[in-house]
Length: 338
Image (tube, rainbow, N blue to C red):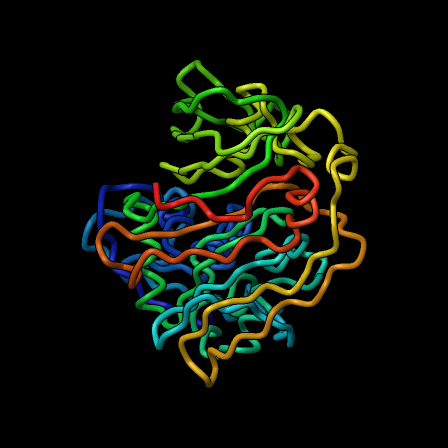
């Protein structure tokens, strides 16, 4: 993204918060601060500082050509395309693959999307390509990417308005007897930038998770989750808060070696539905030798309440889970829509 012009909608807020909301996954707190510090942001024609307030109707221009010179390098990789049209693409992310590019320059799904859909460079060529949201590296499943800036902004608005619902499957520790709802705010753990905790003192981000058990065996339960909000690590923290951490979760679980005990397997190729024989052609991801670096959390289904997506989109059964399911005798039929 060399430059972009935005019009403020919604309530008044600081320019740094506005840009994080609008620009999305490729522009975190530090990136936005650097962009403002480099003089790359103007509000109604005047250079902005981080404390500049914007209000509805203000004109914001962003010039990232100087600050964000290190572009994301397109990387050919097989993509499991679940849905594709001229506006957006939905892919089934394999486990152990980061969603967006990090500072280390390792492979990411964003790099693969940029290679397949070069027009996404008009949205964010530095980290996220057209990805509208992200999944944790160890989580598999559905991710939505826009193919034009206009569609990107529309989908980001839909996520912010909570009109897009996401359903997940997870295998958790312990027996979950009945379903329920977790309403527990999340905040950064003191002195940690990567770990979240449940808080009850008025701080943090509002977070709501619905859950219901589908099958149990021994001290494991397969649960169906619906994410009512979109806070980082929300499902993992909420389930751990209930005393049922996600199996294999090295950050919020009780044991880093738990998943290997229960039969981790290599990542297998995933069959997917394809809507376009050209750019949208599907190629299943190759196997990930060793099966290390992932946990049992999978983004199963995504649905828009107001038509931002063409329909409820569902992944195939996560093939890398199959060995454990066979060992436990669980059926691999996917649950119906919530």
